[in-house]
Image (cartoon, rainbow, N blue to C red; front, side, top):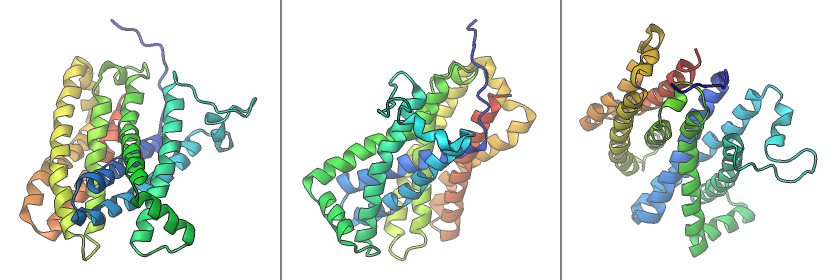
Amino acid sequence: MVEHFAAPPQWEWYIVWYFFLGGIAGGAYALGAILRLLGTPRDEAAARLAFLVAFPAMAICPLLLTLDLGRPLRFWHMLVDSRTLGLNFKYWSPMSVGAWALFVFGAFATVSFIDALVLEGWLGHPVAVRVSRFLREGAGRLFVAVGAVLGLFLAGYTGVLLSVSNQPIWSDTWALGGLFLASGLSAAAAAIALVAHARPDGEAARRKLSRADRYFIALELLLLVVFFATLGSAASRFFAGQWIALWVIVLAGTLAPLAMRGSGQRGSSVLACLLVLLGGLALRIVVVFGAQI
């Protein structure tokens, strides 16, 4: 038997929302980068939507982490050593790596957000136009590619953080990183598709994202099976009475959209996107709170 010495971190709603929005932010940026770098010119509108979704989701994450500290004014200590005023990067600390990953990814998400605003015709400041012009050049493609890697890291890192916490249940499975990454990509595709519904030119983007999301959902379902298989008898904790309803929501967010999106009806597609988002949130709620009881 493996003994666990770490007390439950008592993470609450701030962290749940951080895990959820961080997955959407990282997943949306990665999808935008794929559409821009590997897609056709017709995919550019969908790529811009992805960058428009990634930025606000990312921008809320530092606020959530700051509020979770209990002493918000000390958040900068995670990035800067208060004694030397040098960079406070601890490669051996998952928390430090995560804080820096969010900070660096934020810079990429911000630049791509500005570019999207310019291309949409919503921002015409000379500095913003120069930023957008930079991303149109060869170095800009490399910039977006690096941002995609950081986005994928952020989307999966939250699950890895749980796995290396030495907390019972979380540390008993290696599947959480992949599960959160697949869920983040699925939720990001749903969020972008939902925004595309509000645009007259968003139909092509919605259809492409809907097809991609089916693969993410299939991967998520596979990793859910691996998650429970690797937990063994410890998985019974997640099937206590108070968690059953949440698992029903998780399954509704994975199984139902596979059938509903085939109908081609706008209302069904919107509902499918909402179910995916709700299922992604429910997954994080049950994983974070279920292991801390």
